[in-house]
Amino acid sequence: MREYGTVSPKFWTGETGKELRADHAAQVLALYLMTSPHSNMLGIYYCPVMYMAHETGLGMEGASKALARLIEVGFCRFDEASETVFVARMAAHQIGESLSPGDKRVLGIQKEVAKMADSPLKTAFIDTYAEAFHLTPSKPKKTKPLASPLKAPSKPGTGTGTGEDSPEPAGSGLALSSFAIPLNDGSEWVVPLTTVEEWTQSYPAVDVPQELREMRAWANANPAKRKTSRGVAAFAVRWLSKAQDTPGRASMNGGGRATAEVFV
Image (cartoon, rainbow, N blue to C red; front, side):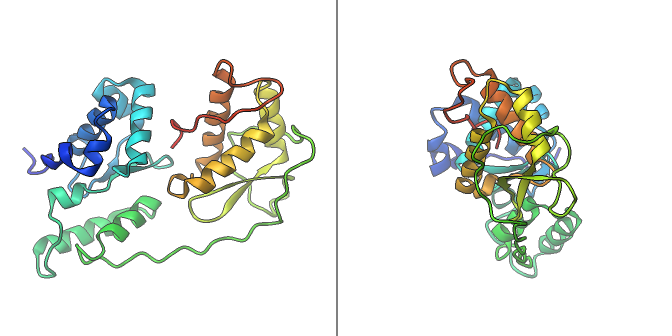
């Protein structure tokens, strides 16, 4: 039997616990993430939403909404590209608030961190526990300049594309639109014209250009939840599908804001 996976009584009375009191699904998922059979002492581990949905009984929609709520209150972070979760305070609860430099566990933690693939979650873990566990702070990533100034088009629905291909970088030879979605590394994905047009054809009840503007506004307002270059197209497709399928939400004339709560 493993020696971690304990839940502090403060889970119910702490600041985060109080915020979750009215959301039983989020409470269930929080307890699951702290005691999950896939977890480890560091609190950063592979756990697809499918696992969360099945093993908690919440279903995909319930688990996605609960995960969005936990991210909103700062309980955890989730990287779509690697399907990895980071429970922010798990290491503190399972290992300790801080360790002395000579503690043997420090070397073990440093080795585990070194094994982690580079990702926003690894950076977040190091930044959170650099002092407590004597880790080397992460270096800020350099932002990439935009290929050209962004300007909203005068007419919606210009362009074409799949929405499922990997984002094309500037200079690749693919015609780019004037829409861009900020990414988690500080750069932006300038949406190909082909992608805009195909999305317009695939989601006829949606004002695609307007939705792209709102995706950009959402990403600017939620920098911690921005997508990776690999995951941003899938994020946009889910957003547009949600808008298309929501009664009274989408119309041929466009309008309204897409619900982003399940796309974090």
